[in-house]
Image 1: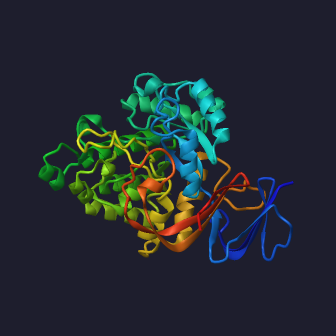
Image 2: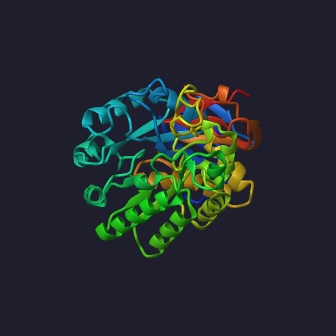
Image 3: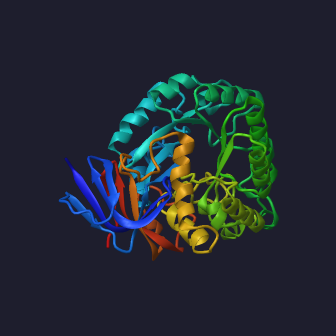
Length: 425
């Protein structure tokens, strides 16, 4: 029997309303005890004095690029990034090559993830080839291991097709993770449409593109009585639609990403493609609206939309693909910009980054209760550090937080009862 003991930690378990000092005993990959003064022999003993132990983070929006784009990153290297960021479960988005629209690709991800440092759960495609014309075999994909469905990177093209997809997921007690965008409005844009895009002379992406997409999915969720999860929310109007939907009993949840509450479109004045993603960084008033939505619970989850690209791909501001990485910085950005700014408590931050996404996906994670899998992040909430993109794990470096000073440093990550990351002290 393998044993690990975490001693003298401040233990925050957001699944059980626990915030106390104590020890955590892990036996054979499972949490065996959470109490005071545990004395036992163990294979690994971690002195967590002055540190916080919490459920490992669950990032429900990650692009692993595997299969098909492994020159950007792959299941193993993204697992290294996740472990360094305290993330113990990642949901793998389906825009791979081939797409996760068939049983073989889902099974490939499940099998290869056994060698990853963290848990990888596949998201199945809504449409074949993500081309928006024909639905996939939802039941077969779920049986192969898909825990949700999405065409993320592209919106589902028609309302009729999305309504049928929602009915399918409802029958399977699953959920669609919706990329909300009207391509007829956003097509060709590379940043937020506004004064800065005009100043730079580049085509912008209007906020109406996201708003129309969000409104459609909410209307369809109501008409089909289905669950839908709105991905990467970035605009004030989209938030108002989601707030209205929740008040009226529509089964909608929503996520935002760290860059939407920490940064705004002014970063694009640098003409650096590492600040380009879709949806784009918005105006300051949108950023403030995102923060208010985090505070009042309109936004349920903080996910990263981790999207690796090579330095060569990101070299040209005008021609680079959209997307930024975020697994290694998400906890620290949340602490720096939400907790230390007084907007939310550390307890709520962990709740939004661990327990709630696990609940939405219906997976056994996000908890430190006895008998649960030993997926744990141990971190120093007060330690300051600078983001050196060249020292990040994985193959890609396209972080919008490069050079920034953040607060909150992961010291240890435990996944499936194994120590998968230790900070270089």
